[in-house]
Image (cartoon, rainbow, N blue to C red; front, side):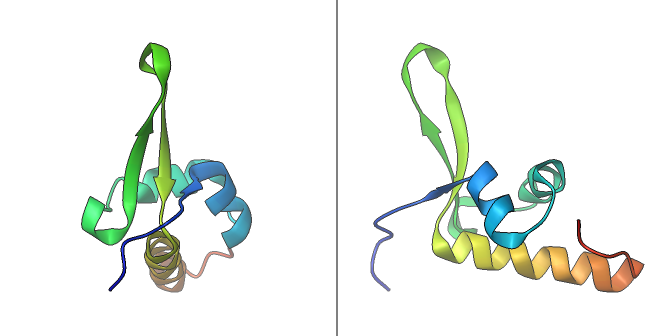
Length: 75
């Protein structure tokens, strides 16, 4: 598998998945770097959670699993 060449911020991932950003944040806590989640660090200790394409797919799988278990619609 080729190394990822780009990443999506948490906010953009939530938009792509059409789900709430807070929900994405909660679920992202279950992911590991090998799942496609990473932190992007900037100056002055500013950091942002980001996902590779695989990370977004994995996040979507978890969201779908959780909603199918609770029968709650996605936001």
